[in-house]
Length: 505
Image (tube, rainbow, N blue to C red; front, side):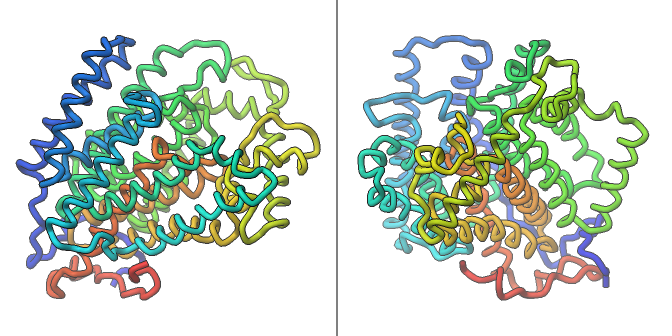
């Protein structure tokens, strides 16, 4: 028996296990359909082409009607289109009417499809799957912050002023439950991962175009890649989160030569993340890689880590100049890119963290109310700070929603990790890849949100919630597989049952 959790490098499928056929015609048809909206969105954005509004709205209407009609029978096209649109929703708003944009329309169509499919198939509207109860509790407890702010001196008028942001907060939970209930089984869940990867490729393509346009600019702020999220830290966070399935597939097939065709793409995305100059994204990428390596195997993780450290020691020039410039920005040392003598944002961050902690200690159960931090922070800071955010998601939740909401938030991230961990020795290679991806994504989320609030809207974290729904279905498939198909290899027995993270919470 192995002393570590290393996944065997040889083909691990049991002779009695045959992976489900999940690609084929359904996947090809959906990808073919997605080609039109991908080109319609990608080409104008990449080459700064302004399409005539009649053309844009006409095509959007035709696609919307097609998606809605088809979704009554099969919601897969609708889910795929929603996945493709989520990271672009801030750049491509598609205003249809007051209060009705592309995101709201897709959410509405998805809810209609959810009701129609549940009714037609005569199954519960809310399916009890792994993580469903936990996310429901997190959504309910965090939403109490709206009532808290109404009852505070800020009042109802303030909640109405930040109503669009509260709606964006609720959208996260809607996305999770929509996908959890529209995904039929593990077969469809596998295809959902492909659509996520397609959305990641489209988003990174747009980021690369912007990065090339900004090369050689004089300052860090001018050089930062904003991406479709229109904010460099948000763009960096999205890239780290969404790279996880690629990392999982790569590490699960590490010893297969053909998988190394992904390496150029990894290098491009790494360069793109570096070009956001987001220290949180860099840390998140490192944490995600560490979590993925740990799930892939302890010995594997140690070997790769030592190899990377040795390479940097021998060739320090491997560290990109932009990272060195950002370090110089933080420390006040001169660099090739013109920087200020002192990184004021780092000092302000510490002051804001202290203010958020003080707020949490005053109201540990309910917090100060949704988005109340920016209005109340002046009472807790040593001097006036322009930033309106806590620059830390954990403190953002604790100070405005209370410690119970913070505990649930951390539990959601941990739930993703342990869902992956429990499937790391599954006989299905794809499920093992997604187990590694779960560790990469949860690690990235945990680290990035130490330095920013990157779990508040679906253009940044939408793929996290979709992927959590995917993992729930893969877990059900893995758990319900016949006993004689559970053993992955003779030399590496399946992991023991863990009652804590195997529950339906």
